[in-house]
Length: 244
Image 1 (cartoon, rainbow, N blue to C red):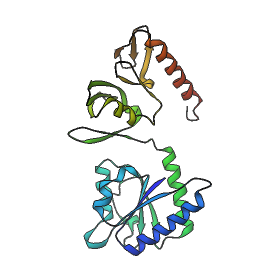
Image 2 (cartoon, rainbow, N blue to C red):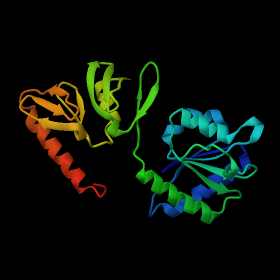
Image 3 (cartoon, helix red, strand yellow):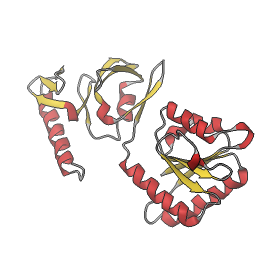
Image 4 (cartoon, helix red, strand yellow):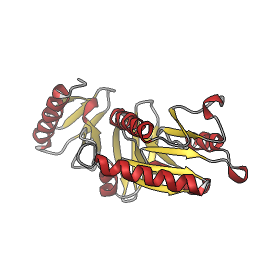
């Protein structure tokens, strides 16, 4: 699990680094290493929040406001848990906190921190990771079920068709696009550089695949056999999944 400390009080920040380091050492044989980065300014954390699974935050110095920073993170698309560490500020009493948020009291106690890590690990295991895409206008994030299929436009662009009837352009090569999807096992690439979410395949016939929204995509000669095997394997995995 990748964690960020965002605390502008250097002594508190260093203490949290030490506590998380010891917690990581204890967890190596069980839940694994905790990777920790530490920040003392809001600009630093606002530039890289998506690489973390959770953020421990207490920003109060020189006009900094942890609640405002948390709201900015949410506006920027960050949905990871934020753990407010209450010292000078009682964050539990603050209004309109952006969910999901958790709380620890300073000085941080070892047992409380260990319990918090357990809770964060549970949240991470239940949270579906979002995929990051870029175009000239924005960076945006999608969950795997939001992307139905993507069409090759040219060597630098893919056209994404989404479940809410929107389309989005993703910049980058076809291979780069496939790399972004590599951690999800629901996508299959067709010979014409179309990528399809197998969750939305309705029927596969000789030279075409029909999606559940009625879209028909052409297949190359002989491609249907391989696609049916991919689809059969995917549906078997879904049936065997504990959440199925």
